[in-house]
Length: 171
Image 1 (cartoon, rainbow, N blue to C red):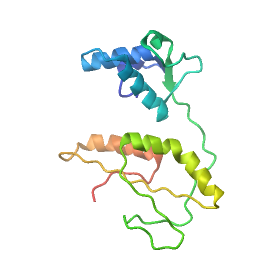
Image 2 (tube, helix red, strand yellow; image 1 turned 45 degrees about the vertical axis):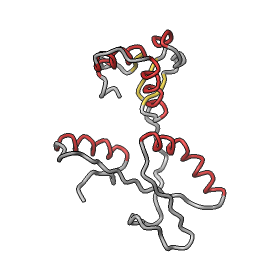
Image 3 (cartoon, rainbow, N blue to C red; image 1 turned 90 degrees about the horizontal axis):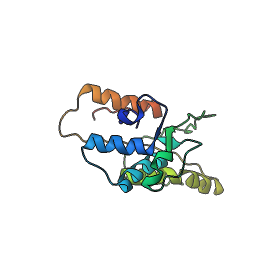
Image 4 (tube, rainbow, N blue to C red; image 1 turned 180 degrees about the horizontal axis):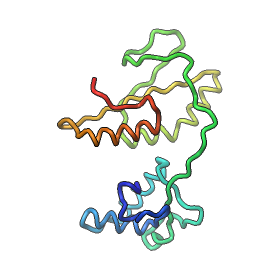
């Protein structure tokens, strides 16, 4: 979000909800309702793109917007990256391998965030029945025409920050 709204961040590591509201309103050329701004900020917090600073006030009403401090998320060191025991090729067809169950759906951004929130519970439930979960991700970019190369490189760079296996390419 700092990269998408530099007017609010001004190169700083921390910004107030009021600064975000003002910058968004300026960018769109009209005053946005606080509930819209608050929900957008809450979505970035839920998605773990940003976090509230330790000394932040609650994200509630507009009169408190100056006390709400938002900052970049602190990087958490991962002790180990889970590795699948054997690679599985995604074919879109349910597996005929005994004991392998597949859940598949096209998800909206909100549903993907909800899914992310449930991963811990899903893994715990699978562990309770002595089972392992493996995730395969497919992202489709649907553009009206061929996107500019620099835009694709930017998206691929972001994907590579998640996994070196993620890269947009044509079929």
